Amino acid sequence: MNNNMNIIKLLLLLPQSDQSPPASSTRCEPGYLGVTSGCSMKSYTLARYQEQMSHWPELPVNIIVKWLKDHSPSLVIADFGCGDARLAKSVKNKVFSFDLVSNDPSVIACDMSNTPLNSSSVDVAVFCLSLMGINFPNYLQEAQRVLKPSGWLLIAEVKSRFDPNTGGADPNKFSKAVCDLGFAPVSKDFSNKMFIMFYFKKKEKQNSKSKEIQWPELKPCLYKRR
Image (cartoon, rainbow, N blue to C red; front, side, top):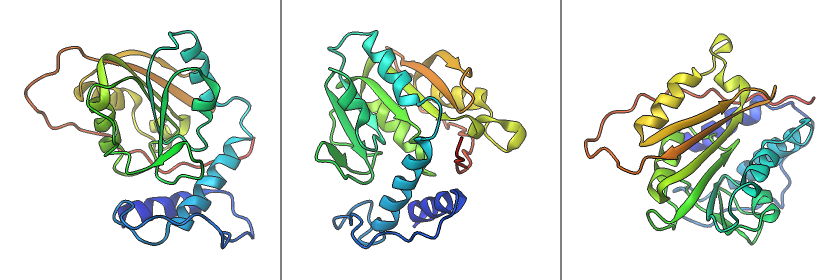
């Protein structure tokens, strides 16, 4: 129910039109996040989200593609919330593409907090505008599990979600929470007016003592045409 409500909130914040979800929208298999109906709404919302992003002057996925091309093509990547799997189609690397809904044969539809990957099996985990769910810390926990020691975590998110002056999360508090999860900060890039980039590396030695992590709330996104 929480996932459904979060998707509905996102839909309500998108620019409205007279269109209704098409009757042929993809429906989910039983057991999808414990939900057996309502997945047409998810497909429609994600499609509108992608349409809005297409009007941005620069796309974060292109920044990530460039970063990967500057590194070894042997790096194995997990793309969390891959959408149409554009990242996998743009690089030579082996890419595991995951999303809540799959409209492409190469995309594995699953709960992104419980992927079929083995622990310590990938070199790079990518979240490109995909921390939508209110349970996003569980997604990052899964990324921590599947990453090899010293593996990279790349996060691109809408800049307004990290603007405390407009109700967004404090980027420093977000970064600290990710570090408490078992990562070391590498850099942040605020130069783009639409999105922010975070770069982390998984610590080689993990703290054996578990600690409660204080995650800042990420507000729903407001996507506007540019």
